[in-house]
Length: 220
Image (cartoon, rainbow, N blue to C red; front, side):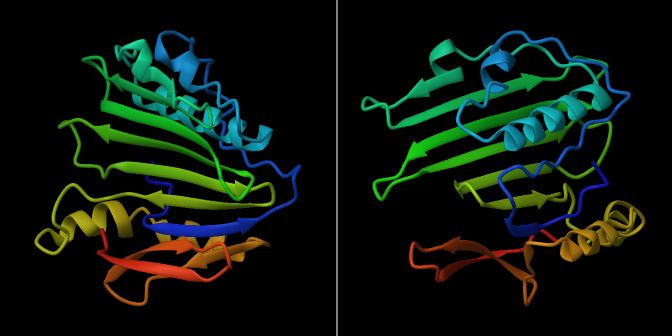
């Protein structure tokens, strides 16, 4: 996970057939059981979007250790509103004793928009246990158009980096995360959001194409 740049927000425009994959060729297949099968269905997103999430979740599971099955009630693992215009799934799995993972939390949301089209959000968070101080891993894909997507990648620290400069060096500088940020910036069709200060912003897009920003303190 240290190979993922921290606190990045990208708006990407891409051809409908474009595919991004993070699958490791050496990763064995992970068995489907419990709520995982429901979550990994991703029925409303494009093939490339679905495959990216499947590869990402499988890579985390294979590299960081085994997880217990999801024990959430069935009506929490998958649910929808009364009109059938919104569907969602939730996955919560704790790590076994030998795993580095405390738990992972995954979700997807499909919502038909009143103006037409649909909003699809897929996300995953991985929390490691006390055997390591490694940051929390967060990834979210937001899509409301067949030709564009917002990609949010974050590694929120688990220690105050102002009071613990060695933590900043170990997990954010020595791992050369900025090289990956630079790689994203150079990709065709990708527009990065770079915070102008130590305070980050939630970036939203109005239907008329203008943006709104809500200040929040940056995690890095």
